[in-house]
Image (cartoon, rainbow, N blue to C red):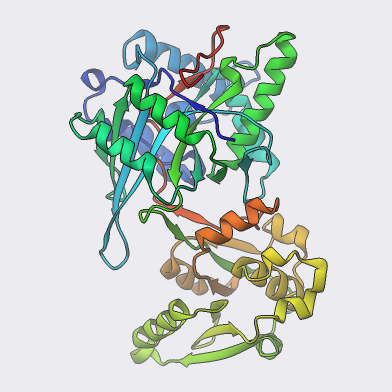
Length: 452
């Protein structure tokens, strides 16, 4: 089960950097080249220079963005731009944001170190990983001996006891960091180093199973790093710094937990024909049509989106290039997937929208192989429904599928069953800021756990 411990976090020194919002960044895997340029120019000490540094045509095996990140971190530490806390702490982290309807939400969680264990031994993934990102993150860890960003994990505690502990602990404290990010989200961090609070939280977490929400590649990378370090060391206690990873933990039962869908744009299919495709879809789905002319498009799009969002069954929004119609495909029968695929697909997957889309529509109807889907040969993933629909203006794109969000209980069920979802099944919102805390992995002394 979950073994979490406090740590001496490395944080930015506000007296040196000034406006703390300017040194923060989104997670590395959502930073576009344009955003990277913006973050570089925003502040000379922005965390992007450590977590996702720029490449250079002259890079070599001994001088590249990974070695530069390590050297830059050491420089900032020596200059006092980054400072390491004197006492081990847990870092209470809240994110306040607005839903699409304007409702205010606050997601609560905390940053700690978590003991690394193999998947299935108290920590469960829910999505597949790719080799490229893992190789990239391993090079960064090897060069820097640090965690620059948090893995985002979930635990279940319906009575919200751990949140209550942190609420009381932070009540009379001044936030260590309080910044508004580029999406207007208020990010607030409190340093909690009270031994009594730490003991209470670590004890409460001991019986918890963890489910990785974001950071699958980084968790697997941390396992690989640990194994490499153990092999290099020869002798180890199991409590070395590399046996732990920096992790943000949040209660999946809290009302502040929000999951958004990721929509799919299909492009470059050979010999795609809309009429046979729709006829084939009609065998499995009830097809609702929202035809429009230019003067009615906005109203019909709104009706189409409302129909999709209101569905209590598996349903997809569909738009086809050069057709002035929006469609909602609603599965006809709850046992459709069972009838089509039988036992070839595990039961826990059969009511997942992403599985129905990828297996029934993409693979069976459109003929896109599993390998092609995983390689994203004909797929583009887009977060915004408006942006996804507008992608139909590109002549290379043929279809767009809008999805409803995956439910948190579905994430839990799939992970507990030992399976992983297709890529981009979930988008946990909001994303965590990078730059709040850094965890140093260097040093030979075992990590001390006050919970023992």
